[in-house]
Length: 120
Image (cartoon, rainbow, N blue to C red; front, side):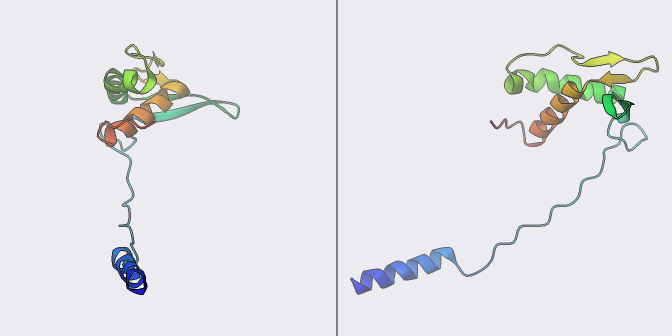
């Protein structure tokens, strides 16, 4: 009995170890370039009073958004969203994106960065 208990304690100590596990520090990310500007595709935030009414994105951001919609919308949201869902072309050829569509864009981009793994 004593021998079994000592063996159990010895095995437990060997398996747990005595060292502390310290994670590697995460390098801070910077905003990506869109053309020659380091804006990540977001040009402006539109407000009415104190309320955000929309966001202005670049043509390159629109193309990335539509590509992500094509690849991930059905898997993440359970339906296929049409091209330019939640977008509206502005007179200066930039694109207005709704808060809902921007949230979808961010979510799909995170899934893409996780190698396409969708978690529930």
